[in-house]
Image 1 (cartoon, rainbow, N blue to C red):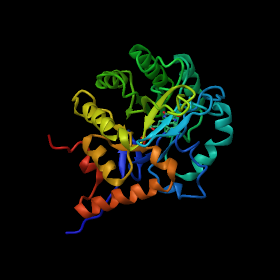
Image 2 (image 1 turned 120 degrees about the vertical axis):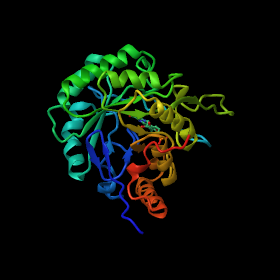
Image 3 (image 1 turned 90 degrees about the vertical axis):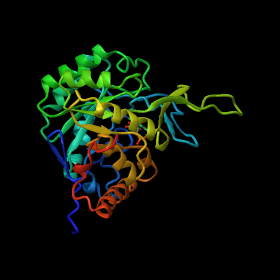
Image 4 (image 1 turned 135 degrees about the horizontal axis):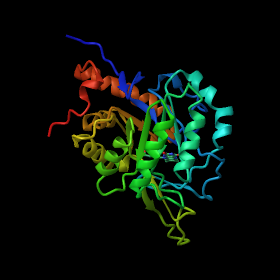
Amino acid sequence: MIRQTDLTVNFAGIKLKNPVLTASGTFGYGHEVSDLISLSKLGGIITKTITLHPNNGNAQPRLYETDYGILNSIGLQNIGLESFIQNHLQKLYKIGVPIIVSIAGQATNEYIKIAKILSEHSIISAIELNLSCPNLQKNIICSDLSMLQSIVYNVKNVLNIPVIAKLSPLNADITKPAFIAQEAGADALTIANTYPAMAIDIDTYKPKLSTIKGGLSGPCIKPITLRCVYDVYKKSNIKIPIIGCGGISNGSDVIEFILAGATAVSIGSVSLNSPSNLITIIDETYNILKRKNISSITDLIGQIKS
Ligand SMILES: Cc1cc2nc3c(=O)[nH]c(=O)nc-3n(C[C@H](O)[C@H](O)[C@H](O)COP(=O)(O)O)c2cc1C
C-alpha cells in the first residue's frame, strides 16, 4: 500500500512543516535571499545571532574555505537588537514560517535584557541561546556550566515561548551541559556549533584567519556532531527535543540525524554555496521517506538500532 509521506514535526510545541531549519549566522537575518528561493518551503528560520549592541565582529580575513570544510571567525558581527527589530523582524514574519531568534550576550544580564525586549514581539516562535560561539575573546560560556545554567534559567523566566540552548560540542561529555540546560528549563537543545580549528598559508607562514583560530563547519564535522546527538538522545534522563546541527549536506544526512535522535536539523555551510541547497535537501528527505514507504518522519526519531 502506498502511504502519504509527512515531513511535519512537532518541535517543542512548534509545528514545523518539515524538520529543516537554517543554521544561525549562515543565512543572514533570514529573508535576504527571498528572490532566490521560496523561503516559505523551509521548516523554519533561525536568525544570525543578535547581540544587544551592534557588533563589527573580528577583523578580516574571517572566512576561509579549506579542502575539508569552512573556517570562520566572524565573531558575531551583527547590527544589534534595536536595528534587527526595526528592519528585519516584520520581513521575517511575512515569510510565514516559524522564526527563531538567536541571541548572545557578554553575561547573563545581557541575555536577560535581550530576551525581555524580544518577549514584547509575539511573532517570534522561539529563542535560541547561542552558548557556544568559539570565536569570541571572552568565550567563557562553553566551559562555565554554572553560567550556562544561570543564563538558561533566567532567560526562561522572562519568556513564554520555547527556549533552545545551543551547545558547544567541546565538553568532553556533551550530556553534562545538555542535562544542565534541560534542568534549568530549556525546552530544546541545538547540538552543536563549530569546532576550533586553523589553517596556515605556507607561502607567507601566516594563519589564514586574523584570529589565528576559528570554527570549522561543513560536511567534515558531520560524523562528530552526529555522535554528540546520539550521546545526548540516548541518555535517558534528557527528554527535550534536539536540533541536530553540523555538516548536513543532503537528505540522507537529515535522516541519519533523525535516527540518532534529532527531531529537527539546522543547516549552515552548504547553504552558503547556494541557499537553494536547503530546498533540495528537503526534497531529498521527502523522496527517501517516500521510497521507503515511511508515512511520517517522526516515526524515525531515535530509531537507530543498537
Ligand atoms: C559563516 C558562519 C557564521 C556563523 N555564525 C553563527 C552565529 O551567528 N551564531 C551561531 O549560533 N552559530 C553560527 N555559526 C555556526 C552555525 O550555525 C552551525 O552551528 C555550524 O556552522 C555547523 O553547521 P554546518 O556544518 O551545517 O555549517 C556560523 C557558522 C558559519 C559557517
